[in-house]
Length: 247
Image (cartoon, rainbow, N blue to C red; front, side, top):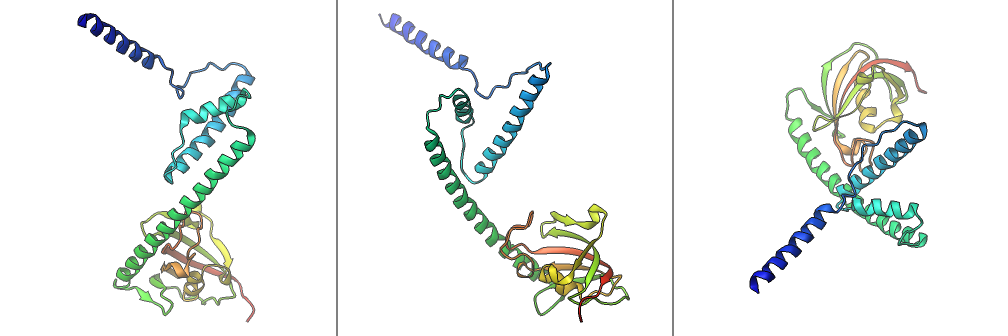
């Protein structure tokens, strides 16, 4: 009797295992032979939507919000067949909750990053000012003379032509006219205050390296690859004064 029960139990276990193994993977990718234009268009549309969804999933994951790929695909299929378990109102309400959570967690992440940037920037500047050749102005701007030109110095109202290469203190490049191969032209009073102050110290033909504290750069704002409270490093070459401002 015990032997019979054991055999039955084993059969049930093996049966369940087989069922689990046979369960299709909702994320399995099928290689489709596409011959017609409609087929190619359909695949391109699906790939475009998939890329967007992956970006959304990854972005939310970075903030600690885990979205289930399989449930997302199920929701898509249900909606396409008018079989959604949610009404349109329920969908919008749930998405609103997700957006609120995303904003809150993103704000927390930005605040933590800003605090870290400020501490790291202060430590960097404290050590950097000890190096030979580094000059510190009253505002806290630090600069080094790489090449001293003999031309005219610009005033705050002037429009200047420069080449520059900007990095974060970890060496990451965030902007570079040098890499683009095209100098930049701008009024000195329309840029960050570290530039406005620093470039006025440069005779035309000079090349300086600026170490700019966050408060003289973008402060607590985000600016592309520049996160809040970032200390910035710029190599700047003053090529010329394009036009003089009002005296």
